[in-house]
Length: 326
Figure: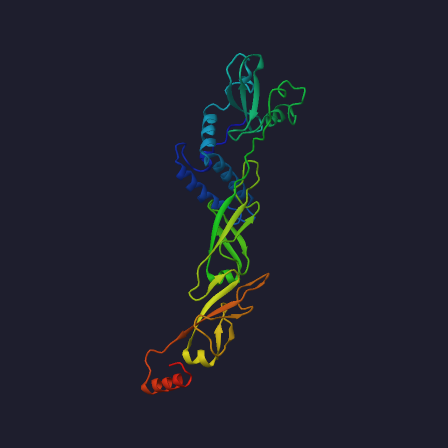
């Protein structure tokens, strides 16, 4: 029968390695042998899979403990030693089939009503794996004496989902493009950042998460974070900005050319009588996305002069009296 794989050796660790040491060794080897770094190198790809398989077991405390027990006593007699008599109290044992899978065989109760439970609570293969390995059958037939007492459960653990955060500058979020993300596992993945991506948006990449023992991978969830801009404030796809004018411009009206977030100069017409705090809208000058464009909202701040000449003060008083302001 084949020997149990030495996962500690795969990761270059001793059997008393700590959880932190296991994770550190896995990340180092995962980066070293990742297929993206070793294109057209099947040996590196196989080594990467081997490292991943080792970490799936040693990186989980419960599965590691069961693995360590199996290393000390991998067979414990014949494959059906756990079936030795109905008078024994209930218990559980793990057996290794010739194909390398493990099966948990649990005796349920004692006496004439005793039965067997074939399961995977500890992440090992089901009874179907054992029977197919020993007898070439997919699973026990209905007529099989074990089938009436047992229940079959899949022994493969599914892949795990992975969460990652991608931090973008304000301009990077506006432009979009391709970015490289380093996952908690040490793996790197290239993703497409949609132009105009909103802060907090979470995207799902199917099959790019942690692989399970069944070979299938979980999903990768990436949350986008966007750094604030010193001038523009974003709300949805609209951008807010502040523009300063003087009191005369506010009274008489004026026209300004201001720069939007993309560096384009656009004309802003400020009507006569504009009040401090008024907001003027420039349509289509906000965030550009594949679905459309937001607006640029300009809040007007009126700067009042602090130092006026005596001549200017006199002129203002005359104007105010004429218009009944004073």
